[in-house]
Image 1 (cartoon, rainbow, N blue to C red):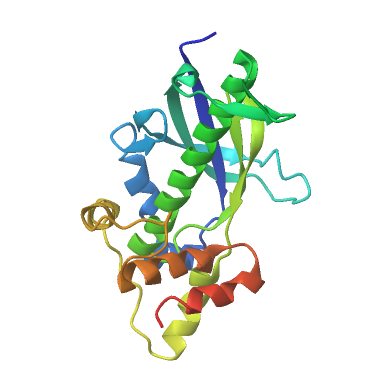
Image 2: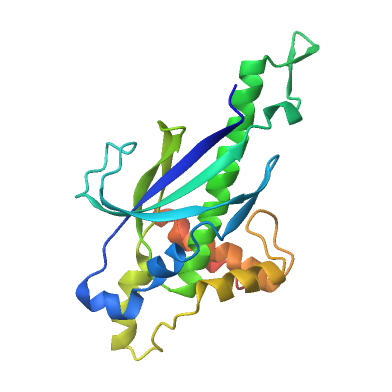
Length: 228
């Protein structure tokens, strides 16, 4: 069995209009500058580098029920050391505890690692929306394991982008951009997390903020619960 494998995630982007570019542009360039300098801490694996590139004329493969014109896409690549032997998953059958087969252990490890990568990448994209509000709207995407399509990636709504023009008509302050590295540093230094029950009011508001981008209008109400 191989010593390492590649996970690649391609996230298709809704393009900005010319008018939106001045107010919302810039986050893609900032993310591309993090290519192979940004790391994720992945369960059972440890720190891994995040390769970031931009694809042209990308079409989503997995979500065939949605039809979009080919767009730019962000591609995130991860080389994962194969540490499936470091975990010892077991199953219970007829009251007896048994070890999984080697093949099943590897599949279990692969599933855990890929799901954790997806979670960490989702967090990065949410923090990108704090750095550059409304900058990224995802039209879905694909997750590949060693070049083979594995599952689909998330899509998000464009509510921040949609409110940009309306906010001008009611004289709200314009969106302000913050360097993504500054946001990542703030998030890390305060030990915030999107993966647990909130420990502070700020963390509660951040967790509520994550619901704002769910591609399901019914869940948006959850984004209003956090600040209270």
